[in-house]
Image (cartoon, rainbow, N blue to C red):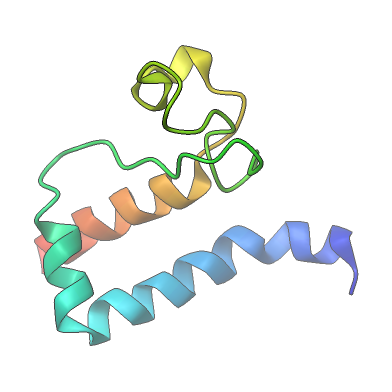
Length: 88
């Protein structure tokens, strides 16, 4: 495993994996679309890249981006996929 190489492709791989999941599986796709225009957050204190780095039980910190220590890449990917699915 080469972490530097993974870091270069991780976002693309995760997007492709989630794209396949939501395009091919009706129930997860329906659930994603049912989120409307809500901000999607992977609330996790120990996930600084994929999550918000803040968790979900810290006084609604999951909706206050200013308090995040992480990037919420999973949330961003899911929101982009949701938009793409709506356009189809």
